[in-house]
Length: 302
Image 1 (cartoon, one colour):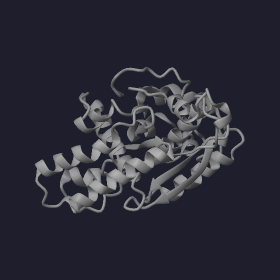
Image 2 (cartoon, one colour; image 1 turned 60 degrees about the vertical axis):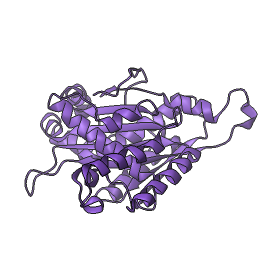
Image 3 (tube, one colour; image 1 turned 45 degrees about the vertical axis):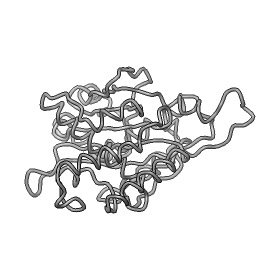
Image 4 (cartoon, helix red, strand yellow; image 1 turned 90 degrees about the vertical axis):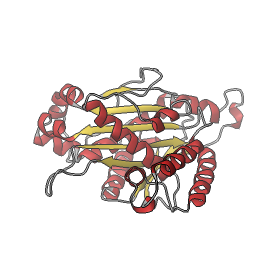
């Protein structure tokens, strides 16, 4: 696995919630990770996307309450039911007929709701290049790892659980995952509970629940959509030789830390032998990200 990025460690969240100076005041905290996915359209019918990204935002429930209230207020002012990154960039569906200037103003205003939460808001994304996965990992290995979306989803879940275990959280603290309804929601829920119930996964006690919900009702899914979409755009830009982070995502880096993981040629080649050798039921292999020496550079770059 390859991981890098501007990184406000998750253990800083633990320090905010659980003050070491008041150990008697500690209490169980259920954090929330709102999660969405993004992928490109298949080039033709019967083919699959070239890449997948799964990503979102992790925070305590108090932080989410503040974000969701302000986010909904902005949507109401604009007269739209929700924020949807792909539709906004294409000016379709909710944004049909909008001028570029209005789209830009709306983006700037709604993303302001994510700022001012430094140390309390954390982004986690994982991407996979499908052609690399199909060509480097054998058919048997792919059966163990699963569909490209699920490879990314399971990695994100494992990353959060591992960081919580190693980052100073109270032993009782857990996180709930909320995913947007779509083609992969049922397989994702099944994968989550398989991980939670597997005694071989050392961090499984951190997992609470996983539920698919509607993004118009569960507002936190809308900023998760933004993160997944921007990570997808960045991933494709890097593959094409571009390295510029789009302004929307760049503006967030001073307010939220990010962990990023990419399954590309190098990481898949590195893990190929281990995948082939391990005994595992179909879809049961979870890639646990490497230990926490993640670079603390100022920009999230794959």
